[in-house]
Image (cartoon, rainbow, N blue to C red; front, side, top):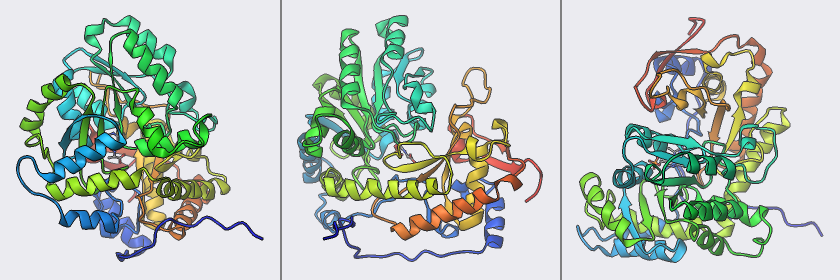
Length: 463
Ligand code: F0G
């Protein structure tokens, strides 16, 4: 008897055609896009691994929920569907819908953060950092050092270093630390999970200092999957049990539901405390919409509620995360270094090791992203110095320890043949890597969150 092989936990009902292009076409397109892959049209891309955010395929059940959406301005049944799903799966009694994750951050931070505040966390995502810095507050990264070595094997590279965290809590007065943000999984360090143990310890430390803990929960279900597989004592627990325990170590959460709730748009803030919820309501009404719809239509709230149930099923998560690991393995087999263990939503290629000849000032990860696009029409995204922005005070470029090319896998969208294609395209660039002599320089950039709109040119002046 042969053990039955792994197979996806879904079948495909609707398909969308994608188109290959020639290298010559791509050379013209990427130059016209000023070497910023965000500026490409989607039909200029064959396989789009820019992001897993809002790019997933909804299920037949989610689509049927769309038809049942209640578009009442106030008190819609869709709001209550979402409320029930959040209470049942996550455990928070109070919530505010928002149109996406950064909107949740905007509403929450408007009610909590003031100028000069300190917000410790584990490699805050760029919009989170942006919303903190925009308020002239300071995010402090307390991630464990191992997270910054792509070759170091650690099962929970998203963990917070408790000593680093405590030294921040000791250094600043309590009034200046409105909250700690724990990102699960930690996107910026490579889609790396945070252990239950760490969540628990961070919470108890925070409580000793009287400080709130909020989870940035875009990929909380993927985090729970890793806890089940990697942390002692959780193998026999269901994803839902693990999720409930995770959130028992938080006072609230923001969520970009475009990830683990598998919707194309949506988000929310969850609260344990009624007073905090009430305080944030005014900002929700000002920035998003009435408190029972936020920035969402009824049908979108329905699909989100259904997505929370599907996104926390083991078979779905197993299919998804195994596909990410499959791509990671294919790339690693070619001798290319990626962040290990493989993350939950993406493979992060170590661009410093791929292109050691390109100085950090010439953006090696962006250079690699452009080369991969030219090679195969595959769009990844730079997670490096471009994304890290300039220091808000000195205006100097910030150079993070990791220069990564993120290949982000949309949920339920591509097959493993697509993954093979991506791995081979990257391997072809790897083979030619010595011919890449120089990188990119900036022509123009926005003062904050520049990577979305930055314009670049090649340092060598060639097209
Ligand atoms: N937090 C995390 C951890 C994220 O990854 C994102 C978005 C957000 C917050 C903001 O949510 O996009 O709904 O406003 N990440 C996307 C990405 C954009 O490509 O990683 P949003």
